[in-house]
Image (cartoon, rainbow, N blue to C red; front, side):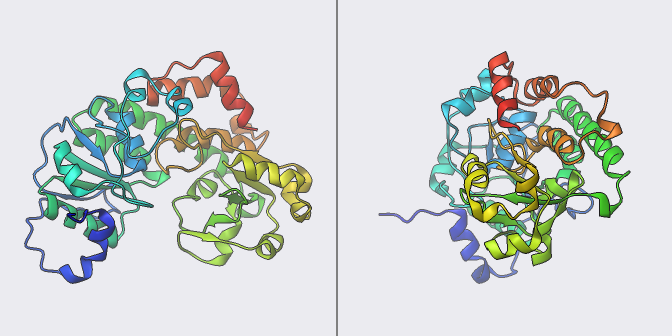
Length: 353
């Protein structure tokens, strides 16, 4: 049987490939100056068949150019699809090249004949090299986009231009700008000492979280919280112990895992934590995508609005805003093309407690 080539294999082979970059680099720009960190190959003016290499890119392209997205890199349940507009709801699951567990063999990718492969998220040297390798291996145009929360407005404008949907990119970018302005109003008025200590618990037992600098927990500091796990250093996701939790003693616990939220309410081991004693445990929705993470893409913008209210209840900058239910309706219509029913909105708000 012919071996399958995936991005994991490509990453593993980078050392052998070395720095002999004979591949013609069309353009590569520093991530600090542009959100498009690297591009390789000859890009069409308006690519009509875009393959999203991972979930962050999938959500980004879905919001900007749903008609150009070939399919989803991740599995979506029927319930999750019901929170998408008809065009996005009908897209097939294709598989992913990046993130945990590559599932798209390169032979299958070539058979799909995409006009562009787009990846988004972390844009360090490893991923830039892997993107170049993918372009060399397949002959397909490949682009890697930086995807941090503060960059979403620029990201939407720049990727919108890349996909030939400048006006659409501008509309979505203005939404991101407005959210960043609200964040600046709230967070800018709070000295560091007045910002709550926050823990984001992932997995069913909640003992997975993100270190300082992790894209998975950046929403905490963006919304004016202090990530208690930053005390353990910088990096990506990590496992922590109950002893660490007791020492950190967060004032707020966030999660997207219903099982963990339930565990917090019944397990005596957690009762010594300030957040549990005060009831500041908040479960964020995951439909169709996470409000805090999963994936770390533009889906988090509605989560920022929700999180500001949870972290800073009663703040003057939040008074007078439209109700959260209205904000949810507007976001889902604008980014996902979905007209939510009253029951769907109530379901989301029931989860977002």
